[in-house]
Image: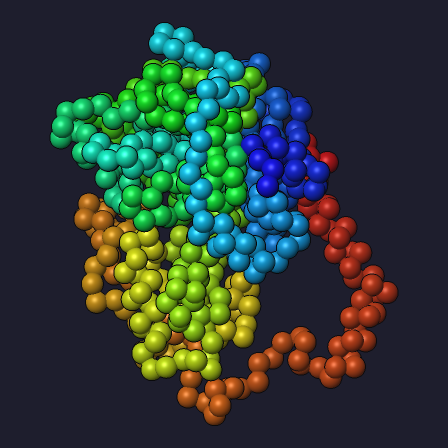
Length: 502
């Protein structure tokens, strides 16, 4: 498979009609985020901002990993070099095959990320147009990146995608939450030893880095190997200038430095994926920047979280849905036909479609406990089980079955133990956030106790009318002029809500 960096990917999106370049001047202060957010809300294209106010160099890009509601995985098809119109099932099995065959990286002497090198006093983070994303944020943030750190006592190297607050020319910080490998498992070894923790931040490069850095992996797994498997080719790494960490050679920007022990700076608030500006400001470790290397006129991808259809929500819905599906069905043999995390409530709800013919007493509770006992899934609060003969990606169908098939008393399941929870969650009290624990729940929305498990006949457009009438209406649809009017209305809405994108 041909290699792909960020610029190749953007070119592919443009060829496929999935990207719009904006050449007029756009400000990094809220304007770029607002345009990108509105494009995501309306199911519009990814956007590349070529002219940022106050910057001769540096571009911004957003919406690269999201897609239309009816095919939210489309841009991931392009990443894997599949046909853009490949089904989600085709994408799922291709991804599982690659994910299960990691490839070790190779080291090279040079790479595009070394076109410009600035060390020491020449370092200035504000050489790049970090966006101010939400009105009320605590500063300018980086949101699509790989924080690269190494365990103090082993060869385990972690790539993680976390929010990054820019504090000054050579200072930044990250939100470090319970459960993060770099933020908690690594740093809590360096600080007691009174040692600075080397770090690197890689921005851009092959889009599979975003997948690998954001997906939950078992302890000790190197994300770079997973990225190589997804690309079906080894990732080329190059050594940092000021520490021994290795970074992707095709990165747009690389930031190097150390995390000082016992030094704290305030971080937040920030408009997070739960849909709220989340605070208050909290003390986090200080990251000191010693070196920056980058490509000429680099591209900085970003995501404006907190609204429906963002890059982050789409990744969760597309990629995070696959891991439990493969584990439960292919490894454990449970009667799972489909698994999905809706974009509308990404990060908090699993929906699982079950094979009704293979259900046995207690298996729903068993599957719930299996999912929640896996640490990588522990922070999601809710699971819902549906009949496997429906398309669980149709969120309206989930709501229908949830409100009509779930017995309010008998089908509401709850775990018997406390489990980790992302401390950003809105419903947690301040005391609960300090502990970082809550309980987990599941809803059994499957058909139960009806003869042959068929239940009442479902009403939908395809089955409500005689077949000849259905075919007649579908055949006359264009002649009635309804499709053309719908298309015109959609174009009108895009022109109204996305300035500069006509």
